[in-house]
Every structure is written in structure tokens, then in C-alpha cells.
Length: 350
Ligand code: SF4
Image (cartoon, rainbow, N blue to C red):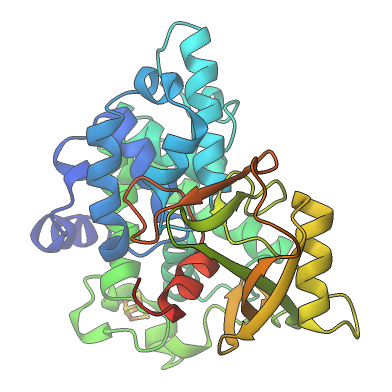
């Protein structure tokens, strides 16, 4: 079965830039970007990122704002901040990327998955990668009961992944790990697995039982939290748009329109004025409402209420710390979150 999966991988694998050149830094960046982002969406940003930061030393020397700007559009900025911290730690210690998964895991933001991916693909260490695709493939191949996240399920998947690595994967650990992940990404799909094209179909217990869709079981989703937030759009004919630098997670470090969450029972207009004053010492008066829109971050369902807004008094000569004017044509290089870009799209052209 393992030989068939490897042969299938050699014939069908996607030509991805970090595969042709398994440089440890490139593999690391790619694996971090791929954790919450589809390959098609991440590829253009990946190419720009490694062109601008071709090694940990160049990333370490960059300002956080430049790093976040290069991450713009990928979301989950905590990944970029952790990569930046890891690069700085490496730079302080001489700049060498550790070769072993155990040492890689000591770096900020590098978990079990990333460490195993980098160590196996770039350095050939025989350590098994377990990601969502691998979990699904192994759960079906071996009819593993239980749901991802549950201790017994995770333990069994880890045992199987380690056994397969020892059995047939160790000759080329990077290829074996990528083959399993690729099988999950292209053939053993979550909803409609293409068993007719699968190199492992003859050995698959879920397929033999006609129960492909039953593995892995689905963990009950946590109930979504429903919240509202606000943004205020202050324009100046000469200066552009008033933006602030967010200080709170998960948007910390990103430029955004001023505003923040509504309290229970609070009107969005009142919330905007209160949040702009409390967080950024900006005294704003909300004016015309823009159409509210939904936004989702993980299990948080957010309704965004944006308003055109003006200063409560005269336009201040000096903006408070963290606030700045930005031209509305949104020059490349600005690190901004998804809500900012959605509000920007609601504005009439300048
Ligand atoms: S036979 Fe079907 S269910 Fe089994 S591993 Fe292949 S694609 Fe997945």
C-alpha cells in the first residue's frame, strides 16, 4: 500500500515551489502559511514573502509592520508574528535553522506539525506529520473510531502515523509525509472521497465496509458566539482616511478604522463613539450608516456596523499615538485586516 501511495504521489503531486526546492526556510514559511489558508490563496503571498525575506536573518531585521504587511490577506496574523519572533531568536543564536523536529519545536509558533514537516521534508528526519488530511486518510484506511480532537482518536492516529513512517516511509520521510497529505488534499476528500482514483483503495477498511463517509466522526461544533462591532470612517479631503493601529488581539499591529465591539444592549453609534474615545482618544461623532455586513472569525459570528464619522470638535493638529492618515487608494504595503478591507469596499470611490 505504501509503495502504491508513493508511486501515485510521484505521478500526481502538484508542482509547488517549496517542493521543488526543499530549502528549510521555504518549507517552514510554506507550512506556516498553509495552516489556515488554501494552497491557491497562499501561493502568491508565499512567493512575495520569500522574495522579500529569503532567510530568517532578513525577516529578523524587518519591522513588525513590514512583516504584517507582507502577510496581508492571509489572516491569522498571530502566525506571522510568531514566525517573526522565531526568526529573531534564530538570528540571536547564529541564524541556523535546527535540523531536528524536537529542536524546531522550541521556536515560537512551531508546533508538532510544523516541526515534523520541516524536519522531514528539508532534513529527511523520519518523523511523521499529522495534519487534518493525514487524520482523515488514516481514519478511513484503518477505520479508526472517534473524532479528531478526542484523546483516544489522536493517540491511535499518532500510533498509525509512526508505524507507517517506520514501515515504508523512512526511506524518504519527506516524500512519504507529503504523499499522505497530498492524498488527503486531492483524493480522500472530506465529503466525496474519490475512491475510484485512490492508490490505497484495496487496503482501505472504510471503503471495504462502504463507510467512507463515516470516518472520521465529526466532533460537535462549539456553538457560535454572536457579537457586533463598529468602525468609523473619518475622511479628510487632503489627508485621506483616519486609521489606527490595533493594540488588542487578534488584530494587534494591524491598521484599521477606529471602533470596537458593542456591549450588550448598546447601540452601534454609541459603541463607536465610546470605543474610539476609550481605545484611541479620538472623539468621534457617527454620521451616515454604511450597510451592516457579516464577518466570521473562527466561531465568532460578527455583525459589523460602520459609519461615516467626523471629529466631535475641530480636526486635531496632532493625532493621538497609533492614529494616522492614509491615502484612500490603499497603497500596497499597508498591513490591514479583513474587516478594514470590507469597509473600504463599501466606500464610494474617492
Ligand atoms: S479508498 Fe477512499 S476512503 Fe479509502 S483512503 Fe482511498 S479515497 Fe480515502
